[in-house]
Image (cartoon, rainbow, N blue to C red; front, top):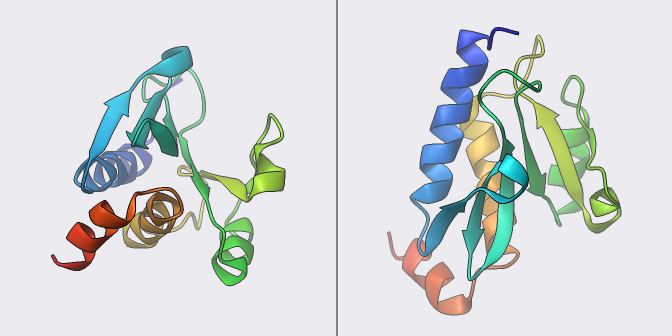
Length: 126
């Protein structure tokens, strides 16, 4: 299955943004791309090879952001029980999918939920 170009461009922007956050590192558990800080995942980026629909999964503790994310076309609480903890999966190829800028805001919120204070201070100092 071919990856829609606009979805791939969004995915690349979100990945680059996530990995640019202080202390962020890329990992590939379960063959999926994730970004971690302090050894904890803050965004699941899935796969970009076309084997699954492209999407990002973020942890949104803010009720307003969480509700907004769930209004995205095709968005749903994340599987494996993560949805109960505030994780939302947002598809990238759907008509009307969120812009990369909004996705990056959500990635930053997900990052802030687990990043140590010193790294958040570094981020805020930018």
